[in-house]
Amino acid sequence: MSDALTDAATQHLTEAERARILAKSALFDPPPPLLADGRCDLVGLSRAELAAELAAIGEAPFRAKQLWHWIYHRGETDFSRMSSIARPLQQRLAQQFVISRPEPVAVQSSQDETRKFLFRFRDGQTAETVYIPDRQKDRGAVCISSQVGCTLSCRFCHTGTQTLVRNLGSAEIVGQFMAARDAYGEWPSPVGETPRLLSTIVLMGMGEPLYNYANVAKAMTIAMDNEGIALSRRRITLSTSGVVPMMDRAGAELGVNLAVSLHAVRDELRDELVPLNRKYPIAELIAACRRYPGASNARRITFEYVMLKSINDSAEDARELVRLIAGLPAKVNLIPFNPWPGAPFETSTPAAIDRFARIVMDAGFASPVRSPRGRDILAACGQLRTQSRKEQASA
Ligand code: SAH
Ligand code: SF4
Image (cartoon, rainbow, N blue to C red; front, side, top):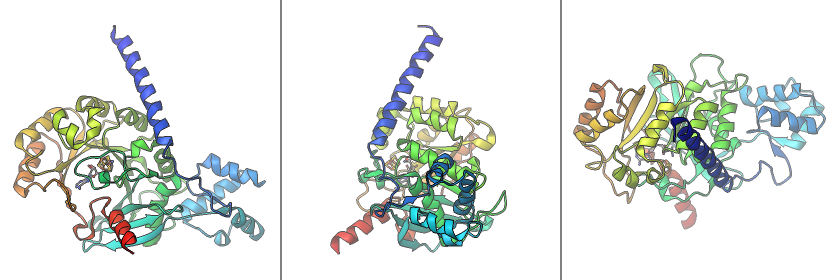
């Protein structure tokens, strides 16, 4: 077969694979954004959907722009405080619609000011959101969940011990950011490059965002909208365990920063640690990274590498990592394994982490060791949800 034919065949396979992934994902769709009394949640609708909801009650398209501003720029949840809207319409809106937030059912603050929220959604399901401030720079990252549980079962991940319950909806995804903002009172949305306390979104909470692509994409499109939350795509990072066909799609449609959970540099080991590797092995994953748009220095791909004692932390592993990512604009986040009860691993020693980091750095890649934030508050992702469910069960 000629190269062009091979490319066409691969393209076709990838399209079919994407369709299969999206169809499977739809089986785990969240409940519709409706309250028991029939009111519809306006959060999480695209601009076009918002306009359609308003058209259905006889309102002109400019109302959608007005409401968008109140919901996403001002952070308002109460129609009666929307001063640019006349009282009769405020009342009509309140009869038909709500502007919801997930409810914080547990909040834990760490000594290092990391704050972890367990949010409950309308159907009672819960997911975790973590705010990680960067005090020196007056900014911080909000780590958002994309699913309740996860279908993948990475061996070192606590969320991987929970089965997938369902996908989160777009309202629930962007709502985690908005509710975290409520907690810090950062409304209206800061405009432009002014300092923001909640300055970045990282899709690194519970779940695999690329197995819930439609809802994640919708939520991030809302977060990036200039007349609302207005976070630039450079301030959003999507972390994936390597759903190769959807990486291309996310790159083309969203263009957000990409983080890839690599964790091992040989297929035999990665097959064990990240079982998705059996489907999309390392060579295919790295090739997808090379295709990812924006390969300039400012748009580096982040490789996440959890440091597991005597499993993946040898000097040889570090040298193989450098060989794999050669030529890619990349940085490597070394994450000391965050232990949880019953986990079959230990954290690498500081000396092993140091040796690994030095080899990666000497090859020209930044290799920060991600400081384990919130150690005192069950910060390994998925742990707060498990604890809360245990407490409920014993109650
Ligand atoms: N499902 C996506 C995003 C959520 S996990 C993914 O896998 O990329 C976010 C990051 O935390 C991933 O790199 C994951 O491998 C890492 N992680 C999960 N459990 C961990 C633990 N116990 N200690 C350290 N890192 C962990
Ligand atoms: Fe799922 Fe990511 Fe955890 Fe793997 S590391 S089980 S993909 S949440």
